[in-house]
Length: 294
Length: 294
Image (tube, rainbow over all chains, first blue to last red; front, side):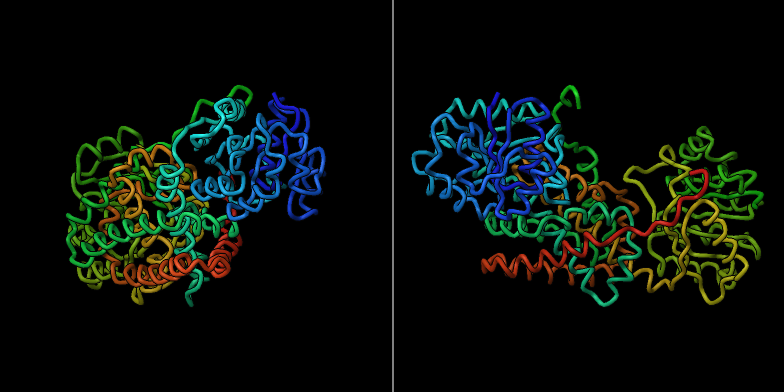
């Protein structure tokens, strides 16, 4: 399907995409660039990329598909660094967890060349980062959200859809605005709450003793608090309006629960808990059918 | 080790204890009582108990070990119902997630017979309840906290320690007060936050759409929001002072994070996230060595 994949940012997400395309036989060779030369070197040593590029621009040169997998705040600088080689017919995608800011950065930096950019957000990740954790199955069975612009080249949008589907992901399309509102609710706020909760336990005088008693519920509730700090710094800043709106809603619900706790109204408390517990019991994560070979 | 186990409340916890003792060959027969006759019947049909008792008192009669596994708010009524058969040398335990209230109830109801009661809290559970989910390995590899009173019979305390250890649990001892402070922090508050968070998503106009996009981070963060409403109603009420204290600490940490988000201070935000993420990455749940035969 592709001759050369250029990966800008050889971390968990970029490395996993490279491995997935190789595994599916969708690409002949992979060229990679990372800000730190030792990362690029490691990616080559691990066989995630075939060639190391000395700049983002050189990773684009000769590629017919390019994945920009850098922290979202580095998107604009990356677009600027590669703009001269953003040519029609070459598919450019990102993997950012926020989309309005990335789309705005692409519009500013790429101008009319933005037609080659298909903004993408794969709903996948791990609490360990780095190319050493890259996994060809990271995207298999996961959703990928594409947020095309009015000027996005429809042929490239179709190519983007096909390549994600070919590595086992389920592709959805929505506007950058709807994307950011939805993910503030179901991803960004839980991360913020998990960071805040884990900190508040960890920092109190008896924190160490408390942590030694914590069980499986705590373990799962706080798993996302171990997520990559640089990635999440950028996400929390890029989408702060939507996240703060969701946080306000959350605080109101928490206030309501605490109010009935304080009043000792057992029946009202049970009703509030039951409505959450029933809805959560009935919820299931959307997953496409597994791809053959998984 | 025991001739007869009496189980008062044949649910997930009581049923799993019965199965674990049977599996380890620690008990000759199990007699069970539940408020609902159909539950007792089901427990008998599933082989979790051998005999159905028609009252809590009858489940105690002839037993040399008794497990009271009822929602914590039902503890006092249960102690009152069985007080006449609470005799020296018979081991009585509970499984409640709060300990001060259960200990107070036991003192009030049992008076000097309280010496036979060893308050216990196994750190184990599932997000599915009921005797049909009882599991002989539920307590294997888990911690069990005992919170003995000054008047607790040391021989029964030792027996309690031995029986939990024999089914694969690691036994810790602490005061009811320290227990409740610790579990407010690492268990009760996370449940409250998970109920509040899931509700706040579920109840908003676009909630259904948002939930269809949620991924593995959301799934794990909200797993405990599916916990049993009646059990958690009682826990949140019984330990509300400690939980509200912990909630206040959490809100202060959340305020601090939101403050740096609003100010756009990327460095300070990353520092706060990193301190949580590093600590969480370094944390591991305490688990005893698996018992032979697990």
